[in-house]
Length: 249
Length: 248
Image 1: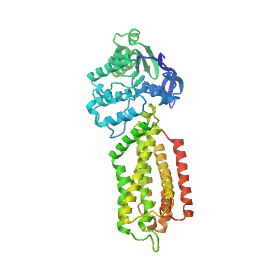
Image 2 (image 1 turned 45 degrees about the horizontal axis):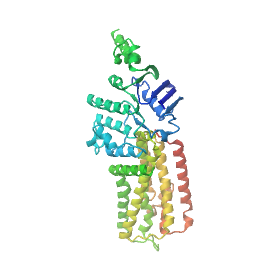
Image 3 (image 1 turned 120 degrees about the vertical axis):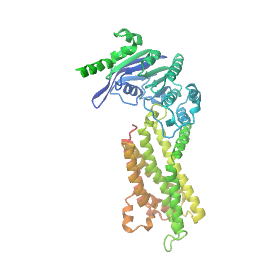
């Protein structure tokens, strides 16, 4: 099973507005795939359709060879997910949230070791809502790794983390990748994408405007830096220039 | 599966107790009402020539205060809160079904109900000479039926309310009239005729009649209507919540 995540012709619209249009993805075992695009480009919608928490209008999706909507229980033993927005009970402590998450899986990792790895061991008795933004973000990555997953979905991986913490998270994920973990992530940090991703897909208004490696993205653009190339593809640069010109006129 | 359930139950119970409100509404309030009624009426007979005391008559009512608090207040609020916070969505991407966390909540409110029942029983037996004259089996059957129908109202409200705010408003609209006018706190027997007729519209009134008849050992022909009302109510609410329930 080389192809861990497979998406064919995925489309999803809200009230007639297309959020994702004919998206195709293929993520191979032990690789990191980056789904990029401006806010509202359709990244989160795409991830939710792949996971089955949103129903796609059309398209074929498989994770680890099976349809996640049809065989939810089986698939999610091996899939970890970190959603963009945090979802936890009021007044719950780190320990309790980890314990309940661990209890959901047959073959779960030791969450205490994971908390230690991410530098949160002394936080286990704290209330989740009292953690700093960065600590909470780390905790959610820990939760996604508790199932001992074969695949992990990370939506806005390091938002809220400081530079040092981001490097630490990259290191941990790279190590897990060499052990065979497959990762699908979204990110707004291009240095992160360059450091982690084997393949990327850039979305613009729900459509794929680039699909390939970071190097290929740079070569087929007029720029030398990936961030410039990314902005060129996703057209943020272009529309900004227009806005400036409009002001000058 | 059982392990998952018990760990969730343990943690959700801790969270619920940490919230304090259910401890107050489902455990303390029924005891306060019991003590007040006990002080006012003591061991007086329910009416001239009655074979049971006023307090024995009220037992079937007092034990529903906790069911009412958990069922129409606690349950709808927690269901709509967990949906609003996308906690149910998080469980959708685990092997565990979001229905598991809802059944954990149902069990928690049943536990509150049973703890309240036991405390009321113990205190009224020790201090107010309470004795159960009816059949224990019939009483438990009635108790389960009341839980089923009141909780199904809560599930329906929590399941279809579009947000936590509306769920809160609906819960209050259901909870306070039910608490005061169905006879759970203010005894049905002391209400004027007109108020009694109005109270008969409330579903819990019928549940309380059922429990009173069972705990006092009154003849079975008086419970047919309450049983039918409770079953019909439960069936309607369960059908509506299954049909219109939203996970998100």
